[in-house]
Length: 453
Image (cartoon, rainbow, N blue to C red; front, side, top):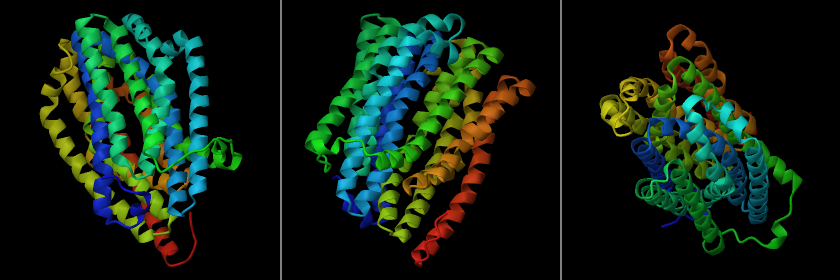
């Protein structure tokens, strides 16, 4: 049963978080399984070089499509708080402006990508034998990116309405489509990298069709033509909060560039394939923590807008506890089952030899990342763009990128893998400090003193 926006301010926080987080987690799980199975099919049916090619191309497309995610998350914060303060008109104008911003910006970036495809592939680490399969994979994917961007934007708005189950379906449907088409195009029709790309591109379009259906028939947000008018103050508010998510994805893209070049320098093509497997496992294994984070956002945003500060604080505490427990379980599973997990992806002996220990090191600090993720998400939900931006960039921007650049000079390829837990620990310490300080401020606001920092 879907949760109405009003229930975000009334229901028990624990029950509400479960209602919001479980569908989000399932949706992310299916999306992760989609990427995971896609990587397995590509690795087993085409080869480890194909995994390396996908590892190079996807950060480019995700960077462009993250415009939709960023506008969805940033605008979702504005929309949740508007619904919390019973300002339905602002919510409608917000949604309409998000649609226009997403389509225009994604289209501009896609055109740029088409004109400078060779330069972009080289920048993101396409070298040696990786270049040919990367080029074959790139074109169908980049053309489909506007649909993916609109899906990612719309998905966040569906969650902001409190309808997490529909957001879940929006991620499940394209996952099934992609897996089925992978089998048809790669295995049965022997289309190689082109088949993998077409399967992914078509799955993005099916997601767009479902999201469009939801907003036409199921949404509380009934848009009219008059809402499709750019409003500068609203665009500024959306952009400030969207910049947090987009900056994070921008930093992730810069990190991908640095990682791919560093891995190629110190370990060759097979080390990029190793990271391709690890990056897929990061998304797959952490799906429940990411689901809790997404489920937490509309709850915190709505109650902050309604000035229910006790519920805001409770939502933070409950989310961190649940996420930390799940992250610890995930770490133990990875620690024990690293070798059999890796063997599923590839038969390449070099990749199989290097990946298990690398996987364990990358996940080493995962039990504490709940504080980092929920802490940064809180500031975004509360509309505090500067603090959200700072904490969002802390791990990848302030710690991981410098560590990846420095440590391999002393420790070789091991320096890349150990950089991940060090960055997690340092960024978690900083996030915990700011979050604790903010919760004290929330108590002051609860007592009627407006001292927002």
